[in-house]
Image 1 (cartoon, rainbow, N blue to C red):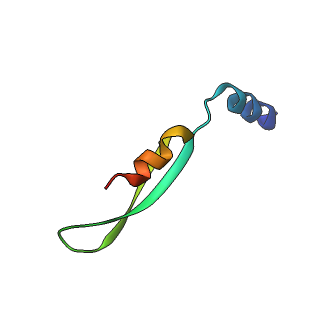
Image 2 (cartoon, rainbow, N blue to C red):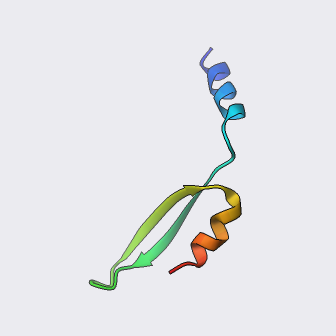
Length: 50
């Protein structure tokens, strides 16, 4: 029964992509990871931003 519930939730939701990029901290110089969930159309724009 749980599988049917999950399947019905997936068909009604929008298609989303989780993007992860490494960001360098200007203060310490250490790298951190920035994560965001967005539509696939805006992933390249988000990754290109500094």
